Image (cartoon, rainbow over all chains, first blue to last red; front, side, top):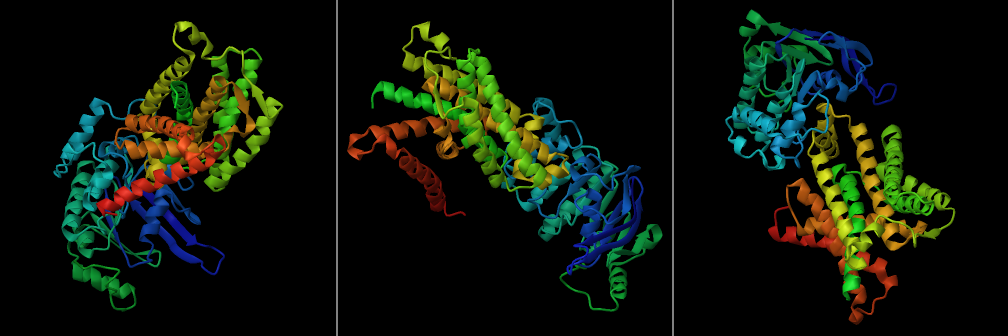
Length: 265
Length: 294
């Protein structure tokens, strides 16, 4: 469970470059809830995720993860409760480490790292099984450098990495945006599968309206640092991509949809 | 080149093999360009020379020298992690300061460690020639170090260190305390260098405050030469290649200096070093250029 109360984030406060990225976000995700987040560029989607992960320090407000106030906790310390997959496939893993090395590293997220060998035969087998579930035939390439994989393969492995150790919340920051359509579809599918299987509380930022409605159980729209739409259950089921686009147009004051910022498909 | 000159070069290569391992740890694992070694190497030598002359057990002297080296690394890491001073600059500050510290430790610019009990003396009466005993002992010591280091880097903690150097953001997202890893890695790197300095003082018979100049270049040259010769995804082989690089470098220098045709003399050492390092840096580029995928 995660709860965000009256969260304010301002970049470069007190300078000519001052920008209010989040202006009073209130959001509670119950355990196992999977929310998708949409909004135009600069709406504060990524900032919200960064604040929850601890990369950005809020000006005001409170963030609780699993009932614990983590507002001032450093990202590395918070990592025991927060799992993440980044937009850039290169950002979420180490290119020079092997696939199994990356996985072994992620498996110890939040744990005490000692001098025990990171790749015991037992752990190797566990990791191999988890990778085999992806169906990408990567289980036979466990010793290969991560850098040899394609962007999509890396994101798929990153998702496995994020789900190896327990987490109170999974943060996905446009993790399919840098992939070609086919691979994006595949990674979205794995996302749904893993989140359901591990019963993960998830917050996923996406640019795709279709993905925002197809995946998860709840959809949130941000605009200028505020939540302007929050739909679940029946209302969400009845919502169409066109309806969402219409909503989007309305909050933006009737302005035409910017093709760069959103994909309808 | 005579056999004695050859084994002398191997011996020196093995001593600097410890430096190469330290430099590998800082540059390749932590991605921390660390010049502290120019100060921690003579520090190790100075500490060992003073301790041994005072009648200490030479192994204990080595241990203290390694701890001294670790302390140097911690100072650099502290300046960088705690105060955000640029890594290269932080290491230069420590290096400069160590010149004075080393003079204080010895109380003079250089001192001899002759006719003292060193780590090698007890092995001299095994029946082997002296010029073979030294490289043999050093080879065993560095082999042990290498195995321990490979095991360390293959542990959960070591893996976190590699991630901290390769992708700090990813490491943090996985709960790795990147600053803490820099402290440990820099301490370990300079402990190895300090140990190298302590062994240098004992096999060469002297410690000198100026002996640290260019240590980093030699260490880096060894790492690069090793990487050029042996490419492997095995950490053990990567570490071994550093030591091999260090030995080959020393033998190459010895060859260059002893070939009368080249009209070189010992004072040309720095020039030869610079040319060798430049070559070692250029060769992989040429090789990659042929593959045309870059």
